[in-house]
Length: 304
Image (tube, rainbow, N blue to C red):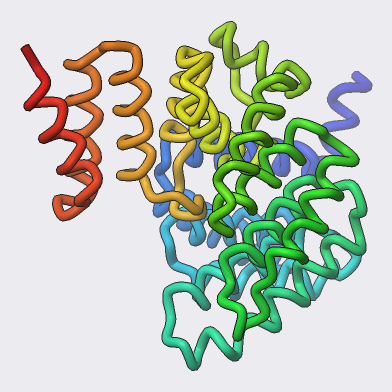
């Protein structure tokens, strides 16, 4: 009787559970257009529902429709200005618009990206995703747009305070991009030595579910470190598989680069057929991808 009464009094709770499960299932199968259709119906009934607005932004973001994603993330942020995630996601999608647009458009957006990320960092002083975003932003931006390896390193150090291993990989990333490969290699090694700190490490090695909370870039960097040091190759293989499986247009490294990395790991393990298969996948993604073409030629030349 109590259960029946609860259902009658709280139908919105059950509806919320239902649509969340439904949308998550569509996301899992990457059926984003269908998710958008469902979300439009739900939003027509509750247009200021924060969760729905965030999910709609996610759905469009996964389809690389940055303009529409920005529209919904902005509504999400405006309705929940004390939520670090709302600022983080809005800043991220503006960053995508800046990257893919003209230089003039980028100039107008970068300050908004910085403002959004800085606000997210202020609202959540321990959020690792936000720190990673700041590291990547300051590392990738040209100097004339405010890029700074020094500022990137500040956020890498903040990451290190909360997670040594993530801080080590973040520093390796900054040093590598600033052409200081020797120091980068040192930090990659430190990251590998402390890899068991990651909550996802044992889960991924035991075939259980991976840790979606991590920035997918971290998976890519772990695989990179394994190649740089030619060690823990099976671990590197698992991490690059996770990166490829979870890949979306929101990720920094394109899929063809991930397949190239996978091929290099197979090559180091003397698994030539698997390496060639990964290179074919890279070239399917981008037929003009010269590193994959070169790697394929080298393997075929050395093949007995």
